[in-house]
Image 1 (cartoon, rainbow, N blue to C red):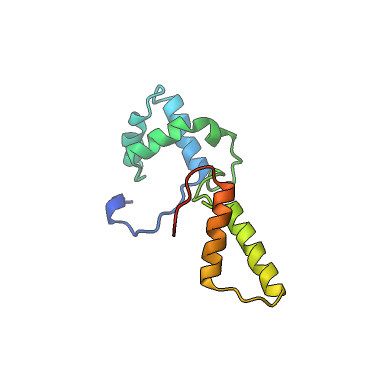
Image 2: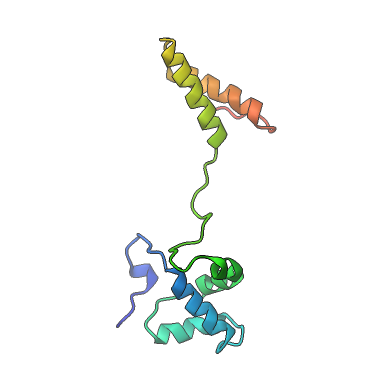
Length: 129
């Protein structure tokens, strides 16, 4: 089965299941003698399109991969974090309360409230939007 280079693939990335990552890590531990760079050539010959940097990243996080449940697709904790989670929750609460009181909610009011809340929550200097 021919492999397509990553640069020519679609922009959407597919997750590599943890069982495959465990296979790679197991090979590195046994046949690869603990050297992750050897795995890329071996698995390329088997039809896998692996990037050496990806294999090294798996090697660095091997404890997490081994500890994960076998049915998982990805490790937990990945993805983009909410940048202003607490601020968003408080701001939404303020908006809902104001709407319940039948008071007008404008974009300008939301911006002012966000700046005030941010100043209370954050220790750093206040930024203007």
